[in-house]
Structures are given as structure tokens and as C-alpha cells.
Image (cartoon, rainbow, N blue to C red; front, side, top):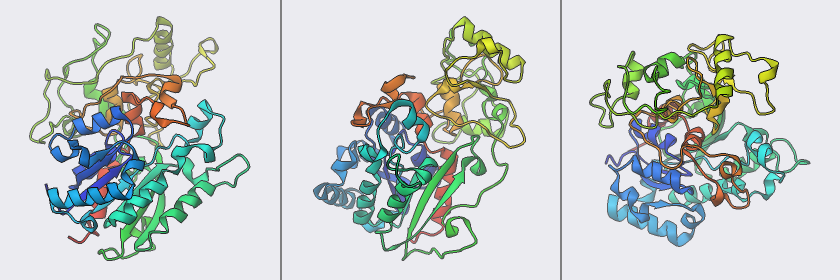
Length: 415
């Protein structure tokens, strides 16, 4: 392990932010994630980091980690096993669960004020970790809705984010700034706005620049940098998918450099060829009525007849190439929101993962999908929430976005 660039990932989910940072040259030394399926996904894809599988270097409950004795034990173990002092850690990163901040997810399932949802205060636990570890930099990530969120119906717009900023401002030894970014401007094929709060310790090489994104702490956007869906997913199309409703091997060779990159094996020395094994490429068995609806949409630019309309959120047809304004979809926990651009079906887990720029070697643990309150969870007890594969992927930070952030932050860190 290169001990120059290390990080701790809090609320890590299935590991999108971590993987992007790893691609940028950082190495995880501690991971925290409450959900056991997401943690299983994270650890299963990181067997080259045996210490992460040691209970001393991962935790499920953030409240356990932030106890003083636990933090003391962690720093002692980091020193013993990796010869790392706590101030040597390059990054502490995290995106606390956003179900309470995300307006649509909150409205769908609950009639409860956000101030009464315990998980909405987990940002305070992240600040506790940063205060104790004193990393060279930190990254806080969350949904756009955090910026305008209210603690209650009668609250002031933006009061939640103001409280978040106040808490992070208690970290006096850091340059800090936040930015609302659009993921499609960082190589991601999605319309996915995200809020990032970045902090860089004042003894690092960073100099504030008022004319750059987040005063220079965040990479500059790149317009029209996103791939088209046909270029991203074209090699995964199986003309005979309805035979068994699962594709176990690649049915074609990669057609461009992006597909080759996503098909590279983990050691990055070769890519998966036609006929080699592919995982998580299983299809939903839609009813004949739904298939007929999707076929009509494919033939009519996404439109449907009145008789096909339902009370449920309407599905949207995707297109092989984006329209003028670029990506107009967001990978969420609901794969049925979108129809494949060339076949009358929803996307597979593997295709969903590529929308988040996960490489094909990355596998996912847990159920394929689930529904209702099992997925939304109980806001009084977040441990009741199920995280099937689609939801794990939908909750992740896009890998390519994380990679670009990691490369940018590295420029400012003293070793």
C-alpha cells in the first residue's frame, strides 16, 4: 500500500466514492457502513486490503466509531499496522444517508418532520471523526435537496444546510467551501446534481483562488464530457435475452475505448472478451401488458396512449444518444423508472452500475431489488431499510466523478 495517499470512508455504501478515489491513487484504511449488504459489497470488492476485513478497521454504526475509546483504538491500530499517525491520513470522506434530505423519497413514504429523523444528524458524527483524526482534507457529499431543506413545514428554507455548515465551521484549521455540481460535467452519463463541501487543512499546499470552483478546491467542469448510452452500454445488448432472462457471458466484443475500459479486469491488464463471464446481467420479467407498452414507447419516441397511463410515476424512454441538453436521467433505486433505448425492458443491475461508471468486475451483494417500505426503511430505525443491488448503486457517488475529485485533491496534499 502507498501510505502517501490514504482515506477513511464514512457511510461508504457500496463503494462508489471509494472506488473513484482508489482509481486516483488513494488507499482505504477504514470503512464505515451501517447496512450489511452494502458493506458486504464494499469488502468483497477489496480483498487486496486484508486489514479492512479486520473488525478493527471497519464498523457498521457510526455512533460506535465516534466513542472516544473507539477513536483512540483506531489511531493506535493504524499506527501499529500501517505506521500511520492520525494527522497523516490524507482524507476523511462521507455522504451521510440522504433519505431524510431528499424531498421525493421523504414525501413518498413518511409524514414526519425532518428534525425528528435521527439519521438527519449524522453529519455531526462525521465532524467528530474529522476533529479527532485531523486529516489533510475532507469531503462531505449529499443530495441537492439538502441546500433548500427545512427541519419542519414551518421552518426556513435552507435551515438544514446552514446547520450543516455551522457544524463543519467548528473545524477551524481548514480552508472550506461548498459547491453544487452537475455530474454530467464530470464524465458521468446522468443528470445528477450533488452538493460537495470540501475542506483542506491549512498546512497543505493549497492556495485559495476566488475565480475557480469552490475557491479552487473542486475540479473545474468539463462541458459535454459525458458518453452516450449506446457508447456506454451497446456491447451489453443481448438479442436473445428473453430466452432465459439472464446473460451470463458477453455476447459481443467491446466497440470502443470506454467499453474496453469498463471491461478491464481488476488488475487492469486485460479486458473481458466475447464469451467470458459477466455478472449481474439479469432481466426483469415484465408482464405482456408492460412489454406492449414499452414496445409502443420504443416506436413512438417515448409517448404512450391514454389507455396505457397509470397513477404510478410514468416510465421514461431512454435514447441511444442524448438530446441537445445532454443526459436527462438519474440512476436511482427504481430501475423501472426508465425503459431501455433498444429493447422493451428496464435496465439490468450491470447496466445500472455502468451508469454510475462502475467497471464490470465490480460485483454487488444482497437482493436484486425490493420495494415499498422495505427499501425506503423506517425513519425511526434505519437498520430496517433494505438495500438491494439497484438501491446500492443508485445511492453511490459516480465513480468517474470521485476519480476526478481525487486527482484534483492530490495536487494540494503534502507528503
